[in-house]
Amino acid sequence: MPLLNSELKWMVVGEKMAHGWMIYKSIWDDLAPLSAVVYAGLHFLFGRSMLAYEILSLILVGIQAMQIQLLARKPLYAEPNMFPAYIYVIACNLFFDFYTLSPVLLSISFILIALDKCLQHLEHPLTDDKIFSIGFMMGLASLFYLPSLIVLIGICFGLLVVSQINPRQIFLVLFGFAFVSGIAFIIFFELDAKDSFYFCFINSLSFSKIKNIELSTPVIISLPLVFFMLGGMFRSVIRNQRLVNYQIRSIQFMFFLSVTCLISIHMSRYANPYQNMILLIPVSFFGAHFFVSIQKKWWAAELANIIMLTAILGMNIITFYNLTPNFKALEVSDLIVNRKNIKSEIKNKKILVLGDKISDYLENELATPYFNPYLSENHLGDMNNFVSVETLYENFLRDMPDVIIDPQRKMKPVFNRIPALKNRFEIKKGNENIYFLKNVNQK
Image (cartoon, rainbow, N blue to C red; front, side):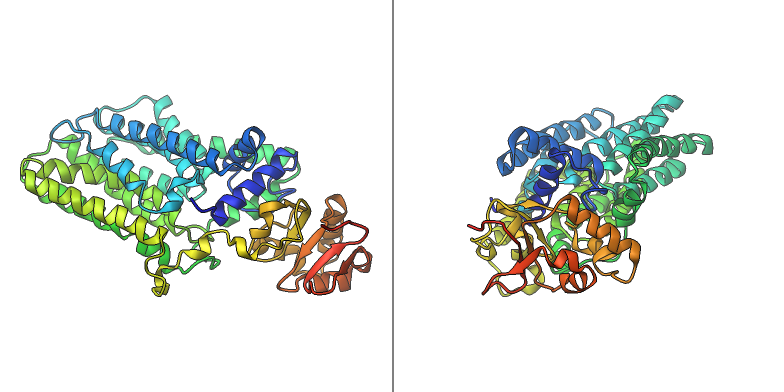
């Protein structure tokens, strides 16, 4: 598998945290806090191991497939079946960045636990402590992947519309979410990082995009999931088999969940195909309804299965082997670390890359908090603010880089404003826009 830019980003943050630095305060990035803790733990145990990410992802997909199948132990479908787990596992092969341990994949386990409680409530009203646990689990999910917060809105709205739930119990759900979020805020408040927590993490929930790839790419990749989900919705409504009241209400509830899952995909600064993984929950649910409704016609079931496999695995193969290089609307090469652009003379150094191309971190370690170029503009682009200048200088002194790679010339106004920092660096001949710390032996 190719190393993804997203994977390298998670590895760099995990490495920095494993060395004792703190997310948001000492590492400016919008990665969710619990995901960052997982990546720090992985670095502590395995170092920068892409294989560890993939093996843990494989285990997690297996666990989640079992979770989804356990939802079907309730009378969700007209007949007992194994379709939900089957569809989930197959759909996890839609795109090659689905194979890694993404924040979305980490959050899905907690969404499924909350969904299990919701489906129980549709069947029999739950006690207050279990209602509270729905919000609690969604709070944990959002600390792994913030757009999961949007799914909570779908859960609350769905429960209000199709279940016997009162406003006090909805308040309990929201209180469970606020309880977890409040604990996270208190931790960062005590560590003097509450402003950074809001600036880096909470503020990342946005429809506005930073273009890391063609925005059409994740949309095109999601089409097999969307069409299959819509087909399952349509079939579950018009099928001739009779549905009991609980099954009808579960379909209505999952419709609201599907809408918010679609919205949550777009509630991030970046467009990445792995964000579509949250759609696998409603796809598995409605896909199972689809197959149950046609399985008595063996030829129709087999044909539908072949079409699903062809669409999902075909999309994977087309993108993995780049079989459409001239189709710019489906451009995936920017998702992969370009090893050709790595500067061979810079290895095993503490570096700072002021740009979107982070491939040079592959053989080097991050220095200073300014990892995310979008967030770094708050200091680097505000040299007329004395507080920003002072804080930036202190951050450099605390964690001085050996090399600064500055393709966009962002350091020029910084050096003009802070001559003491400029005097610490020099430019070697033939390496414009690369600053080397003086008195550092270069390989």
